Length: 201
Image 1: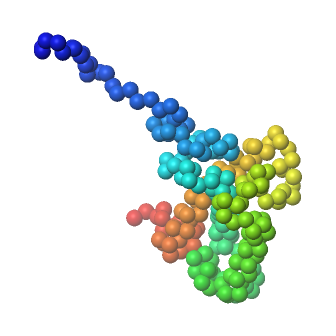
Image 2: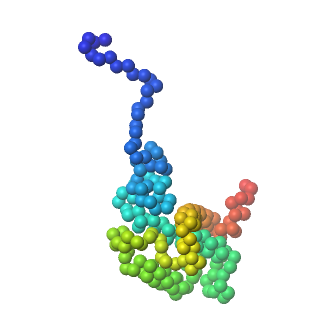
Image 3: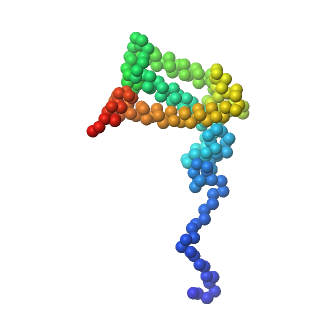
């Protein structure tokens, strides 16, 4: 030992103490992203490993998530129904949803795009961007004012139903992606390809 040098005892079992002042609820080893404190239903889990909420308005992102979730909830049902049912005498019908896009008359596709565009235009009132969509502080993400059965009037169940919609929408986005990839891989409609998938080699 060198005279005058302080002696330091280091234990092999002593680990490096790393403390995060505000950890993410979903990933405690990461710092909490801004979405965690946004008070939006489902955002309190803090699952944002890419920290997108640091530069994307969380309300704008939630609006997009809800819209895509709703579309995919309808799409998953339509994807299944397409295989078994069609409008009587409708031209270009095929049980394969991938082929149906190209076999449907262009006029019918144009009608669908037009109706969706009108709904989108009226619901946003010419406010499209992240900077303008939520200039009204009373505007809630995804709330289009469409509630014919008055589910939203019951404050006790509103939060539970909002979470149910969010979770089912997320599940539907994953489910629709899986179904459409299954059709791409097998080249057959969803249920028609199950025999090939689960048949013994």
